[in-house]
Length: 132
Image 1 (cartoon, rainbow, N blue to C red):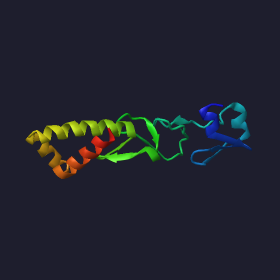
Image 2 (image 1 turned 135 degrees about the vertical axis):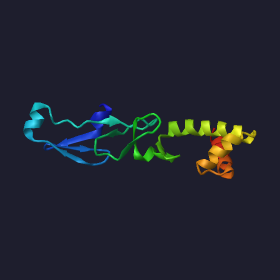
Image 3 (image 1 turned 60 degrees about the horizontal axis):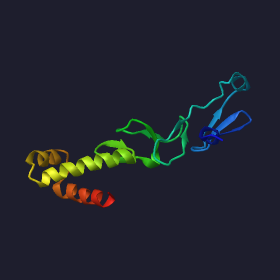
Image 4 (image 1 turned 45 degrees about the vertical axis):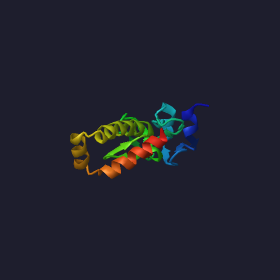
């Protein structure tokens, strides 16, 4: 059985998404013609097996631009990111923080313009360092 076969259950002309439990109704004529299909896309998060129908709660990552389940969304700097893109963004921010700690005044000004205090940035960098 494929991933998409497990994502939809059929009963009496109704296809039910197993992820969001939405019923997609089709006429007998649509089913006979083969039009009774639900377009599914995979969640692209590592180890997630969900297949998402158009009605599933989902988001498109602001980094990789791939669809994911809402469970994987991380809001960061005004973007909705998946865990992989968040880790990449955190690594970049940690490298930028290292520059700031070495006296990069321009970076410190950019952090302030973004509404991030040096204390907040340092706390974030410590958390990222523990995760790596």
